[in-house]
View 1: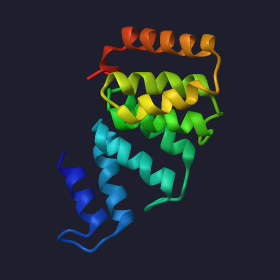
View 2: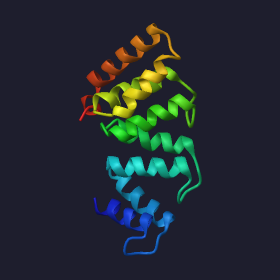
View 3: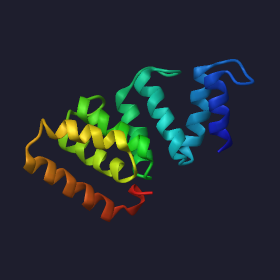
View 4: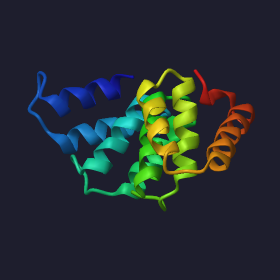
Amino acid sequence: MAQAIFGGMHQYGRGVPEDKKEAVRWYRKAAEQGYDKAQTILGNSYKNGHGVPKDNKEAVKWYRKAAEQGYVAAQHNLGFMYATGNGVPKDFMSAYTWWCIAAANGGADSLKNNDLLAKRMTFEQTAKAAELARKMVKKNPKLLK
């Protein structure tokens, strides 16, 4: 997506002046067209307040769009938002579920996070979250790339 490339140029000042707001403008164009990496970057922008006001709910919205397309970084980030209660109510089962899906996509950090999170959950909760992940993938195979 050319829009995402322009976003990166402005984000890092490559060939143009560094301008986070302009980067967000270009990333948004790509994100609105369904480009999962741009959706994740836009989510990061809202999470960190780069080029836009910090807004965790908006970050979750963009992470979810990319996560539902199977983009592992977005799945991992969405799990993090649930684990910490940023932009969504804190929910270890949802975090575990998203990290299961991300781990199935090769997300090693998500697997490590689930190991840590499992220490704060019951066996029944982790089993239920893993089953939910399987059901989500069955309902939407695009969750796995």
